[in-house]
Length: 296
Image 1 (cartoon, rainbow, N blue to C red):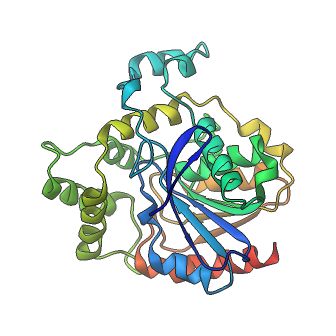
Image 2 (image 1 turned 60 degrees about the horizontal axis):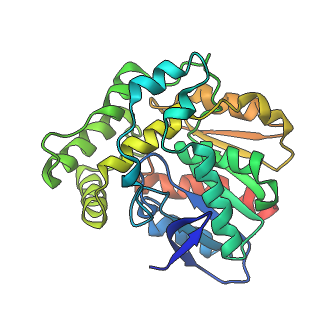
């Protein structure tokens, strides 16, 4: 896979489809490598003529690691949320990751792009549109949140599995943990991934790159990022917000809030879909995304 320097950060990425197609950038969520965007999802976009780009966010997968920045002190970060100093204790912020995405599009001569980001990637997508408007043609924030601190974001059970770490962090335990977590935050029966599908996905991610320290720094970036929800009314970019009806990690009200804050945004809630992308959900999600993307 190719590697490029963007925003001063080494980024691992892949491109699919015609160089002459409309660029379509896919941004992964917290701890998610670019292979989380399945080949079936990518192919569905390529078949419609898009130039699809997926990449590893900083500190995850094969992109640049920031081990020299150490493990963040979350007590200082959470303490700093009250007085605005949280960002001073974080290795980097979500807005830095948005600058990486803008730099990648610049380096690949792929601006402006349609940008779809899931979960943390959906937050990065919003900040990309706010801070680098020339980089986006349309945005698709998916299973994500506006940063409004007054909203209930997760169920207690979902929040617990997000922060749970397998001990010891063996391949077997990580796969077992992924299956367990999915049964809390994943899709309902009609779309649910099988244990075999979940095990294959978790195993592939572990074999490609296991970076637990990067998870800690990405978590700090989410927590320390200055709030941006009140800025979303400034956006004029075409927006489709997609959310799952049974998402317990980022509740549907959070996606609804994103759509309400962005002028003229369209909101779609998919029945029985959770905080994941199981094979059965791919055609369902693409059926909503492709018509919107082709409009723009």
